[in-house]
Length: 400
Image 1 (cartoon, rainbow, N blue to C red):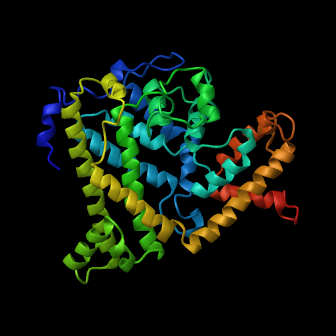
Image 2 (image 1 turned 30 degrees about the vertical axis):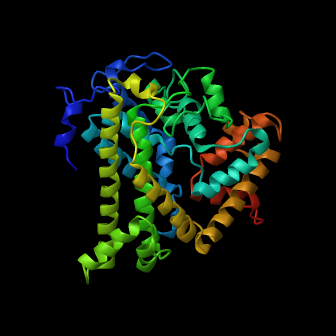
Image 3 (image 1 turned 60 degrees about the horizontal axis):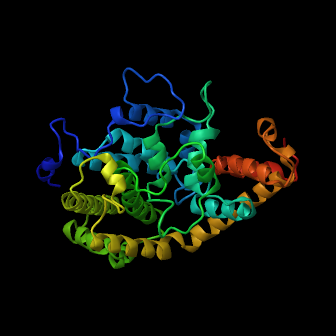
């Protein structure tokens, strides 16, 4: 990583002209006195870390459900790893580390229990009621469902954090974009304009790619340790294969766990270095002069090279076949889907079974309003609590 070559992009204060500056923030929807000791983005980060939805990530599945072992990633540990990678990249590029960290820590808040299988199950349950999308659910959590403060619902985060949370993967409206906006985003757009037609800040773009880097590398780590992958398979994997081959040849006789660590570390380094080099090229070519210019470019500023991007796509496809669709994972996730579908359906048909505070939010059984409240309740569950609630609803021993 050649830090010296990036100095041309930095001001005397060590910040890129195209960074999001906390003093230039567009502020919060509800005005409140700011902290005397923290920037607005540091305060956003702290509010995210202290909220209940963040704590629950500890027992939400990344790939493996919580009871399969203490050493596998959860949504919480994954979010921390994304934050570390995003901060490191932002430091080299002179971007705002605190904003990137806040976005990284919040990006998975909307995930339901049991990972992508849980999201698919809830989306199927909600099809006639507007569907389910984890990014939209994250927005719903930080603007409505978290109730920690006397003056407002949600966390009252800055415009820049909300913008990055909603569209870190790119614009949601505009030319060539045909998908329907999730309901939560559509509703919030009537309250505050997050400029859904434009690209987000450079910090949000960094966070999105840090997410790719983290889950590609660390899912390989977990898959190898769980026995779903082996070294022979990894030798054949696109992109990662040559790295594993090199490490096996370089360190003959070294313990398996250490080889895994070395290969994963190298894989992360290759992706980070490529992202930095490609982004610097984009900055030179586009002559980016401030944060607003980043949003107006009409294409991502932060990016991998075409070669590495294609390699990552190929690696994801390989992992999909050899790990994410492994029969052992399929069996557990099939059970998980059934648990969520049955739990959702029972609460929708009998909302009086919900905890009292949730009952009070419901309309009549089977209605769209009730479905959304039931969805909020189920999506907020940890893996463990979802199994416990399912047992309480369907265990014929009539436990209370």
